[in-house]
Length: 479
Image (tube, rainbow, N blue to C red; front, side, top):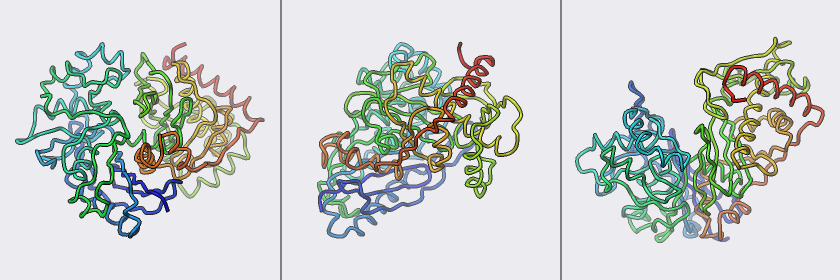
C-alpha cells in the first residue's frame, strides 16, 4: 500500500486537491469553486479570502472520506497558489478583508518607490518590481491596514496556518516577487522601510519542501487528515507546474503552452537578464529556476472555432511549412522572449489559403519558443535533451511536431502535469522520497516523445531567420 502525499492547488477560479501514492498514481481527488475576483477601475482585483479555507477543507475531507482507512497513510502535503496574492490577517490567521490578487495593479506609486530604492538589489537578483508584484501590493496594504492586522500573508500561508494551528513561515517562491531577496536570503528591508511597512507584518521565509508544522487535532477533525501529517512549504503555481512536467534537474526545461507561452527551466547559476524579461526562482536544492512568460501563446488561435481545430491540424500537417511568416500576437506589447511595448501582429507575405495561414500561426508561436530557449541559453542556462511541454497547446500533436521541427529537438508531452501534482512532489520530497529528483523520477508520468520531421527542419529554420530579421528591422530585437 505505502505512504501517500497530498497536493493542494489554490487557483483563481477553484481549489484542487490530489492525493498520490509513491509511484505518482492519483488515489483521490476533489475540487471546489472559488468566488470570481472582483475587478474594478484603477487596476483593482480582489477575491474573498475567507472562501479559501472552506474550499480546501472540503476538498481534503472529500479525499479522505473516499480513501477511508487509507487516509491515515497521508504523510505530508504541500500548497501551491498564484504568485503575489496577499491579504492582511488577524491574530488568529483570519483574513481581515479581500485578498489583493496577482493581477491587481493599483500600487503604481509603491512600485516606483520599490524600483528606485532597491535598484542595486534588483540588479543583483534579476527581479524588477512592478505594480503587479506582491511587493507593491504589500506597500499599498501597509497604508490601508485594517485594525487588528497581525501579518500580511500569501495564500498558502493562510491555509497552512489553519492546518497547523499557529503562524507559519512563507516560502521563497511565493515571497520572490513580494520583496524577498533569494540571493541574500533576506527581505529587502531598505525597500520596506521606504514603503513604511512594519517588519512585524512579514513572516519568516524558508525553502520549498521545508516542514512548516504538522496537522493539529482541530484540523484533523475538520479534514480527515491524520493528526501529525506534515505540512511542507510549496511553490507558486507556475513553478509547481514545471516540477509536474519533470523539469527538476539542471538543463531540463518545460514550455507551458496555454493562453500564453511560459518557459521555465533549471540552471546551476542564477541567470542575470539586463532586460528583466527572465527571472529566477530558487530551487529547493539551492540551484535556480529561470524562466519568463510571453504575451503570445494559445491566444493566437482564440478566433478559431474549437470544432475546427482537429481538421485544421490534420490539414496543416499534410501541407508542411507555411509559405508566410506570421507573428500572431493578440493585442499590443510583448514581454518575453523580447521586450517591446509597441509589438503587434505581422505577416510577411500573403497566405495561400486558410490552412496556410493557420499553419503559419502555429509556426509563429514556435518561433517565439525557439527564441526564448536561445535567449535563456545566451544568459547561461542552456537546455539539454527534449523540451517538456504541458498546457492546452500540448494536446495538439500537430503543433508539438511543428515545434519539435522548429526547435530541432524532441518535444516531450507530459499528460496530467498540473499544479496539484507539482505540490504533491514537494510534499513527497523528504517524506516518502529522499529528494525532489527522486520524487519526480518516481511520480511524474513518462510522457510521449514527439520527434522533429527531418524534411521540415531546414525550411522552417529559413522562416525562423526571416522572423528574426523582421524583429530586428522593427527594432524589437537587438542586432
